[in-house]
Length: 281
Image (cartoon, rainbow, N blue to C red; front, side):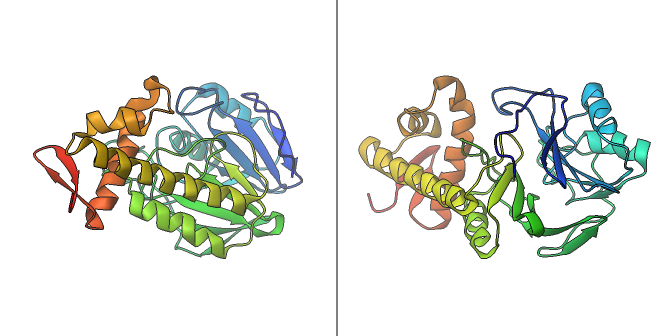
């Protein structure tokens, strides 16, 4: 598995004999170098996460190989991952596989799957077999896909390179996210192919580091709350994320809210009149 292949938009790069990657031209604060679209198989093609509805990206996918595109698989329906699926399926007749979009106003509502994979379902798709692993958290319809022969896990935005994904309540759920990280321990993979960034080796170490990062952030939140006393979300965000650039605080605030909702469910904090406080403090 080539973990150092370049991330140039529009260029199909071979990661191994069965997997190629094309980066969409949508680089930005929340998308990094751009959304990764993966092409799996040789005689028939699976397109995983077709990305945004962009004409240049569509042309790059269609021009990447002579084999027919038979399936389009999405990890989740945020608007940088699935909108091109509708147009690509219309041109190729490919079947759409993924979970329907939740109704939170942040989703690609054009995605209507032909097949919604069950948790743990094995999907024989031409040259490859993918196992669907439901991993709600970043969004409620997040699914990771394991390509067992390559020990390669496609994670969408569940696990990213170098950053922790934003958890977007109310559809995004920190309790579910932590549980989803934990359940990945049961699967055999060495490499992680994220929705943004490069392929990562030592996949289980990556997942464990991410879990520890989230728990460290939660512990920091509780320390800040103990110091400040009852405080609104807007006042909590700067000290809890004092190691994050201020231009990212609007996104960090969403993840912080997800932590607070998790702690509230656990009976450790409560909200009164817009202020959050530690119970018993």
